[in-house]
Each structure stands twice: as structure tokens, then as C-alpha cells.
Length: 174
Image (cartoon, rainbow, N blue to C red; front, top):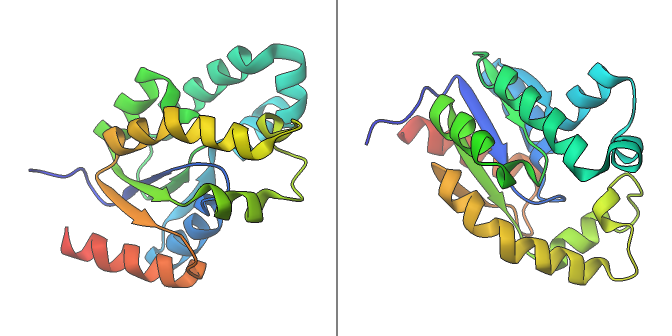
């Protein structure tokens, strides 16, 4: 199987999997640019994600996300961290899988809870039962992450730099 160019690396996975942290390190070590779709949406709109969810709803946010993913996946020399729900749209999965090397950073719900416990910037976790929310999201999204990914890498219990080095080794073998 021919894999897309490794000068476009796209990270997918649930919130708290380490996409932004690992993505920054990966970009630095590979001398690539780093972008995060959520940060890019905030930069372009001048509003933060919770505000966009409040005003436009999840549908409005996903429309913005789809537009940004279409645009950014056409860039080269890039490591792109996507939002946890980016895989929910078929167009996003097509753009990601077809235009770059997609790595699914997977982790457990327990690890997600630990990593996101104090984060008030995640609209989908502003609920009375974040664990149930994460389990429900995992059940829906895990098959989509796996469908779009060229490789799956666990971030469970590992230091970000160790995961980053495993990814670099994986890319060199591809």
C-alpha cells in the first residue's frame, strides 16, 4: 500500500490524547510547521471554542472545522492536530486520509479524565457526568479514528516525548 507523504502528518484522537503536545514536539523534531485546528478556528473567528458552541451550536462549529481542515490539509511541511470530533464528518475523514499520514493517538477514558479534569475549555465535558460523555464519544468515534488512520499509537501512560520518538521511528519505517 502506498502511503501519503510524511511531510503532512495529521493527528486524530479523543480530547486528552496528547495531540497538541505531541504534535508540537513532532513538528519541532521534524522541522515542520505545527497547527491545531481548534486554535486556528479561534484565530480566524476571534472567538473561543466554547463561545462558538454557545452561539452557533455544535453544527456551526463543525462547519467551521470542516472548512479549516479542507484548507490546512492542502498545506505541506505540516503537523496538524485535529479536534476530537473532526472525524465525525465524512469530508474531514476523506481530506485527512487522502492528503497526509494520519496517526490515531489513542488513550483510555481514565487517562482522558485525568488529563482533562481541570479543563473548562472543552464544551462537551461541561456536564454532570464527564466520564459517561467520554465513554459515549469513544464508542462512536473510535471506529472512525481507526478508519481514517494509517497508524495507531497509544499515548496511555507514556511521556509525550517517548510517544513522539515512537512516531518518528514509525514514520522512518513507512
